[in-house]
Length: 119
Image (cartoon, rainbow, N blue to C red; front, side, top):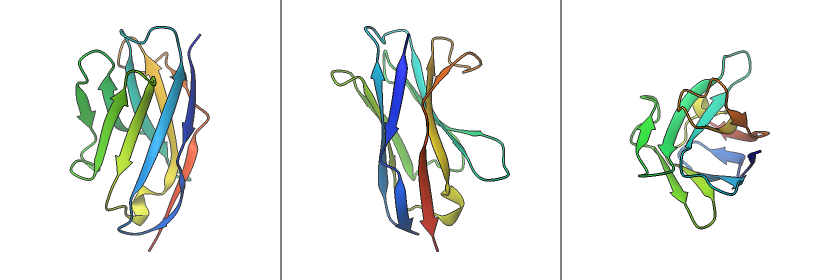
């Protein structure tokens, strides 16, 4: 059973940066895709970025391309989301998730971490 723990959220000003971490407790991660999602108040959860554990292939939502970078540390079994040039509209609870299919329909989810960007 995979468990995910997010950290790194906080309150920042527009233009600032944050790095989120998603630590996984799993014996082997090689067949998995790990993704970051976010949910703002009153809105549906949306995809932000994902990375394949094997090969490190990344994918981004258009809204974060060029500002956010997803990466992984295979030794630490941790996935990071570096968020630069943050905007107030990036304010949300950020969740990491993982499954072996990449569509996240049956994913394991973390508990979430709050990111608040003030203008």
